[in-house]
Length: 195
Image (tube, rainbow, N blue to C red; front, side, top):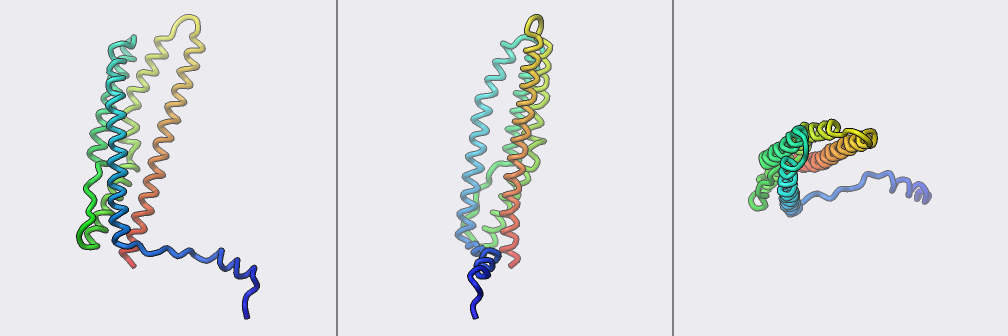
């Protein structure tokens, strides 16, 4: 006896999807793709630093007031620190795509773990180094405002603080989400090697 169509549809919709097993070739491709992605991301970060360091260097010379100048210098130091930490924590190693399956799997898992760890700690080495310089610049802007338009200028500075805080929060959350996706890949590899 066959089940009524509604029961078959319910059974079909509630069954666990079958995940096809990952082949060694799939892992090799994913390892190479991760390496390319990380290299591209790091290149973009280096290019951004190459643009922002001279910009804040000009601020050191041309902005009025010692707080704006010192804040700009602190931002430059924050960028330099972030670049050093990125190189230390998040550089892509050469993907091992040749050799025994165990070596390829271990190499890929290590690369995923390294990137996950870098992304989960991004608030310490990527976001936090900017905060003292930006805070000093905003404080300097606040203290430089005088005369007519004082209220409007301070409202604008307050909005700038809110926008900067929002941007930093979005960066932090985006990195946490990316780290969670990497953890899913690590878990998938662990299931593959356990089974």
